[in-house]
Length: 315
Image (tube, rainbow, N blue to C red; front, side, top):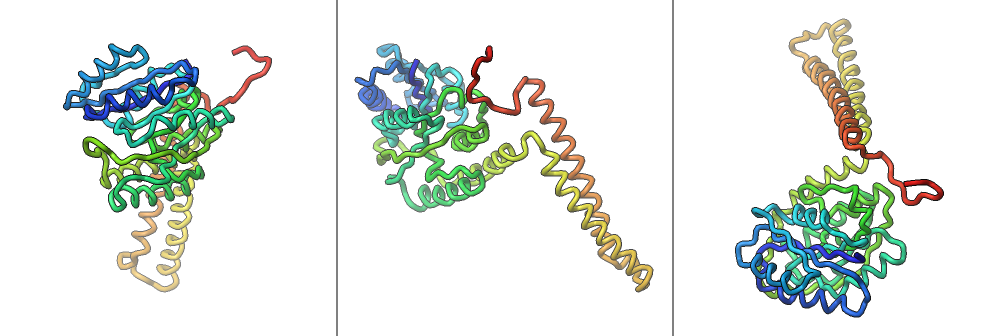
């Protein structure tokens, strides 16, 4: 299988027929063996019944149905889990992404890239509630992860199969896959793609997602920098706290001996106790993190490295 297209679906009954038609049209004549994986994320508008009809008439269309609405990231993960293509392309089901851009993503993949991200350069969304938060979030994510993309939020991307094999998705993590992939040495590129106004239905996403994205960004930053060495993060702050506590402790003793300051009236005594206690807490947290990291990697047999190629070695 050359290509797997994964589309999370939530109440898109009006868009489904045209989505299937556009995907077929975009890929015909390219000589690709492909599959379309539709994941019903608990739709209540008849989308499931329509997906079954499409799958019965087109064997290249595969369908998964959730028991309830779990969200876009779990729906995407379910599609990734069953995808058989050497390249996996997720896209939205609202027809704002254009399937005609998929061959462009594949061309970039064939240039040697592992991840190709779409950039909605001319985005057809409202400015205040969608585009402005997106600009701020993209700038923040690019700066903090070191993977500079204009549009992390664009669902239309292309991944080599092996890149996704080592990445587990939680929360809103699907948008951070390029950053997570860069951790294992993936080559990441970005190309402009078309973006159309929504024709049917209503958007399921708004400004309220911003807070969730920020929290997931914190998780990604930790995974990128300290997932195998948590003691270096928490231990560092423990040492800083111990050092500050020692300084305030010496000042407190000096004030007691030489200035005869009453200890129960000296706030530095409380600060010393607090800083020393926090130092112990940070170091203990780092050690517990080290235990969890070893359990995570060793129990599942996960390597702490990623190999791109092998020569004269048996797999």
